[in-house]
Amino acid sequence: MRFTLAARTAAATLSALAVLLSPATAHAVTSERAIAPGDTLTLPVRDALAALPVQDESRAGYERSKFRHWIDADRDGCNTRQEVLKSEALLAPQQGPNCTLTGGQWYSPYDDKYFNDARALDIDHLVPLAEAWDSGASGWTAQERQAYANDLDDARALIAVSAASNRSKSDQDPSTWQPPALGYRCQYVTDWVADKSRWGLTVDPAEHAALSEALSSCPDQPISVVFAR
Image 1 (cartoon, rainbow, N blue to C red):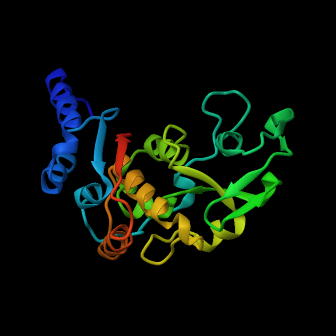
Image 2 (cartoon, helix red, strand yellow):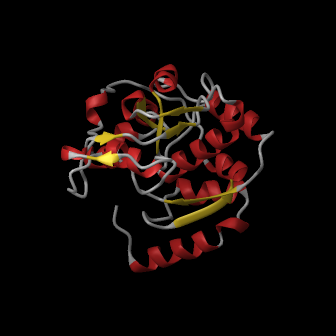
C-alpha cells in the first residue's frame, strides 16, 4: 500500500498524539489504515486491546509452509532461529561453522526453567502462524507472511522457550492457553496485544474476552508498536 506525503504526515501526527486517543478513536485510526508501515503508536495496553477489531476467525486454506521460515535475512550465516538464540542467551554460546551453537544458557519464561542446551529450545512465534492466518494473514502476500515468520525487528514477536512448553501451546490463543508460569502471564498477554497491533491482526470474541479478563489484573502499561504493514 502506497501513501502520499500528506497522508504520511497526517499518520505521523496521529501517531504522536496516539497516547491521547480514546479507544474508539484509536480503533477508527487503525481500522482505516491511516497509519503507515514504520509509524509508531503508543497506547496503554487496555486501550490497544480495545482498538483491535473483533472478528470471527477462519483457518480455511492454512498451511504452515505458506509462512517461509527460518531464513538468513542478513546473510551472515545464521538463520532466524539462531539469531533469536544468540540474542536471548543469558550466557553467550560459542558459534561454530554454519552458526552451530554450543554451550550457553537460556531462560524459558513460559515455564520458568533454565536450559544449557540450545537443542532443548524452540523459537516460538508469540502469535502462532496459524493464529496469524486466522486473523488476517490469509490475505497477505507471501513476502508479508515471510516477514511475519522471521520478525527480528520486535523482540516480542519471537521468543526462545522450552520445546515442551511451545508444543503444549501449539497454535492456541490466550482463550485456551496461557503460560504455566503465573508470574509471566501479564507480560504474555501484553506482548500478544502488541504483536497483533504491530501486524494489524484481528482478535476473535473468545480471545478478546480472555485478554480483557487477564489484563484487568495486570498493570495498564503503555505499549509502543512500530507498524509492520
